[in-house]
Amino acid sequence: MAEVTEYLYRIQPTRLEMLTQGPTPDEATLVAQHFAYLQELAAQGVVVLAGRTLTTDERAFGVVIFRARSEEAARHIMNSDPAVKNGLMRAELYPYRIAVMATPA
Image (tube, rainbow, N blue to C red):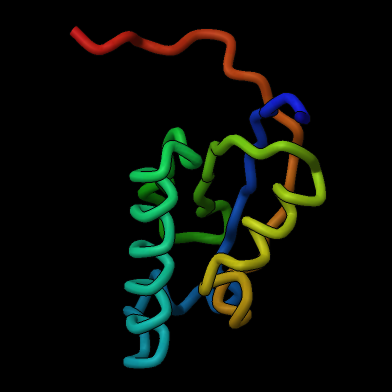
């Protein structure tokens, strides 16, 4: 059995106006699907955390830190994200290692 490794994918909107002027109805639907996808993966213990910067310029980005058994599996998880799969966001995958993480109180 392959060891589980951590990965990070960085996402950015393909249309900056989604952040500056608000999403179109189709974009809002995809964002909701993206959020539901990440919530489901978190419930399964795959996603460790996900979030985004609060900037609304070209530097805005989100990150998803998650666990997968291989780079191929990690790429599949990233590419299955509805926001990525439907072109709402572009994504880059990185091998990642969590060095410090708070423990629940």
